[in-house]
Image (cartoon, rainbow, N blue to C red; front, side, top):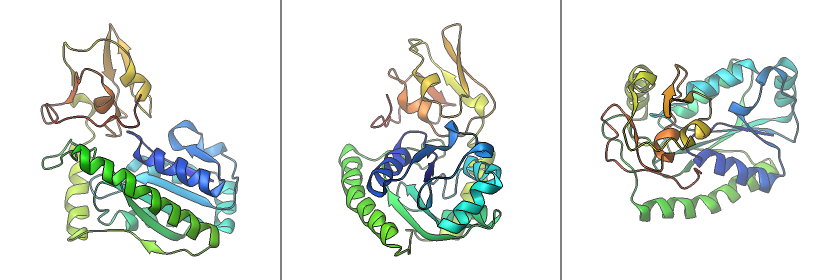
Length: 253
């Protein structure tokens, strides 16, 4: 069984590919009730993106709410994780291990898969060029097949690209992300909005509602940027920092 969180679709794509190759059920974290979820499959996989060199808080919340029977079954069957990242994970693997350890779960294997950069809500973060984006998607295919093969054979390993200065990046930037990167009131919409409702449909946590023809954000934003990237007229922005910085729509409808 694979539990995944995805906003713009990178982690969803990887989870779906792993599910196909392993013959495992794939369940979106934001579309299930962890307290009543029933375990199925041969193993439990956790697939999620890396945000600011850390694990999205939502993932830890879902793990903490899994019912005891589910956790007991996962502990018996075995647990593994895959982190998708733009270039490097920082110490996100350690964060995921700690989240799982709170339920007495230990991942037998942890991998990272490099996917296109999508995060633009902090200074210095940029989108990949189309050439780099396509190359990352192409390279992900063989890597996912190798990961699936290893899981199927029980040949677990840890292969996460933490990058240089991993501790510093995670300890310094991730707290900044938590403090400044998830502020729902900073989202705004321009007059180019066409009231299509895609932002509402794409939001994985149901944080957006269309009111008087314009999106309105509630207070449970997870900073996934699905609303920004999926807007057909680029009318949505986070303060001024995202203005004119491009969009990533490969997996968004």
